[in-house]
Length: 191
Length: 294
Image 1 (tube, rainbow over the protein chains, first blue to last red):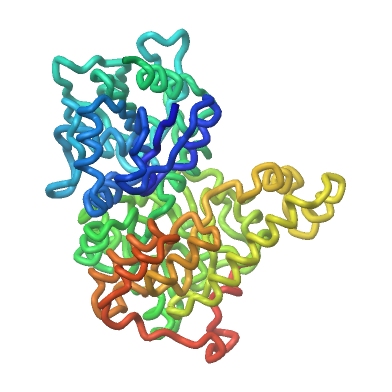
Image 2: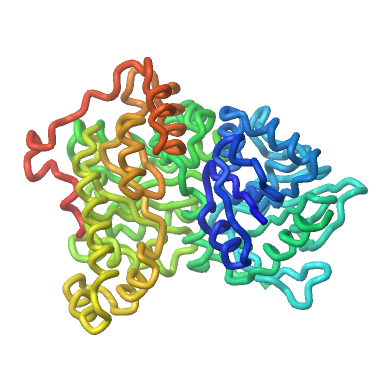
């Protein structure tokens, strides 16, 4: 099975490496044509304003939305969460995004870089907590009824799933823990 | 249970900037232009390097008021520069809440012997390097990101190319050196054996490595990315060009599609004049910023 990583900017190689360790074929997605034959797409951490405007400029937005309607799974980490959100708080004016998930997301919700932190995250359905690396991280402030909350802190929701869409505020690609990637791969495999 | 300022969080911040362009700005308006053009961060300055060169005198940390105004103007990370070794300036910038500190040779060095001990800070640091030894010494001191020094404010990419090629060549050398000879390499570079072993194991620097110092066109950005940079700093190259908005957007797209000549040709069209630029051999020894802090 082939899983793509949106390769416009950010922690691209980290996700590609993580997928390799999970035993699936990783594919860098820079152009619409690269989505061919891909079961799932990871949108990595990076700057959401940069990735969003490059997605729009190089014609990826509409193609990704179409592929999602046809059953492609998507996993957005950090900036990926912002890009998946239906509504963005503290964004730039008319910030480009996919808007696929019924969530309201606040950018840089924990403050500036010096407030970035690590903390364990207990995820629903996981035996033990995963390492959470939060870097200028966003948070989900409101979620629609179709959204399943997988983890929350006192500040808000930090992991959620809606059908074939998965998202985390933190960066599983910066840890040695493969469980969230394996979880996403199972989502991609499910019919 | 929340641990702030870990090395993973500091280094991770730089990883999130990969494949992106960080632009020097001196006003909130310029910062907004940079953000809109797709910059992953801005460097808040009182003067761009070309003007620091022209002004002469002692160049210090920017006025906090300028930095705060720029922080207010954009949602992307804001970096700012301190003088080499000037940990008090760094304490001030950390207090202001800048997202990354550049301990930079562009400013007049404050300490000729010691760089800042960057470990105790929660805010991450980027430092310049001309070769692997410099890069690893800065990492030992706590730098979470490295960039080439190049020759700032010249609009001439030749020194950045020299420094990136040198680092890459030395990494290849480390990778091919037998384990029992690594200790001599470590000694020559003045760094721990542990760090040299890590370079050998990973085949790259242990932190993100950007290009900086003289990049002034989309083609320059592509060149540096093809030589192995993880991303690009553009100093004077944008706001000293004839059409900053267009130049900024073009450099962002060239950094992404650095290995696609069709995209490069397209974005290089009709940019107007790039910054004027300086021939390196016309600089006196005292004008060369790259020899500061080695």
